[in-house]
Amino acid sequence: MTGRPPGRLQGDDLIGEVLRNMEEGLFRIRSKTLVPAIYRIYLSPDDYEPFRDVLPFIAGEIRTALDEKIAAWNRSPRKLASTLLKKIGAGEAAVASEYVRVSDSWLVEIHPDLDGKLQPGEIEVHSELGAPKKAEYGAGSLTRRIIAPGAKQAEVEADPAPTVATAAPQPASEKQAEEDNSDQTKGRAFAYIRYADQHGQQAFEVTKNQVVIGRGGRSYWVDVKLETLPDVSREHCRIRRDAETGRFTIEDVSQFGTAVNGKPVGQNASSELPRRATISLAGVIDLRWEAI
Image (cartoon, rainbow, N blue to C red; front, side):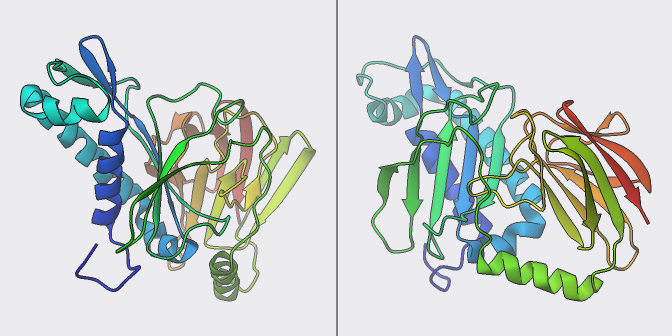
């Protein structure tokens, strides 16, 4: 990572580390080589903030880069086989006939590291071959790669995923962002979100220009923390308010989907929220949305 101030990450840095992680995670089985389909990227809170508003775009570019890489491998598998198969422990004579992913699509998520493990400029990438149906429950440890500018690359074992999600402390950058939002909106309620979870009937007053909704947990900061089934992602969707027009949009960043009045938003896609709507998360919990 050169040609920029130390610790100043660019989108290309994230793409490069995901592609490197993709290559190291190859798994050979008979005449096929399985390619990791799930990538969870963690950044320090300071590095995450500049990316926050363009996360869907960056995730889309990463998925495009993954498509291009697997297509290139499949166009010339014999040329790449000698190098790649050595990395996964296969003999030099072995040649992968096809590179495939287990899941139907790439899952790319970018999150802030709220545990304080990463310094500015470091990137942590977790990858998996395929998505478990019940994510984060009974999951084992993952391999992570931490890349620091000018530092030696290291591989360590990540802590096992907790059995029960717990709320993570809010970092200074998140607190400052919340304070900035409160200053802009002066604490006025723009909308209400009402729902029932395992704790009973709940109501959330929307006073910020962005609200993050999900189960929350380690390294996942949310404004609306839902106590519900794991089908609902730790960070499931985001609602944004346009300060100039007062219009609201909802973005789906989940694994199992978000729908507005029965119509799916689409993974890593956004749609406009009407003044009143029912927001369904993974088909297991409904939020009643009402803008003022």
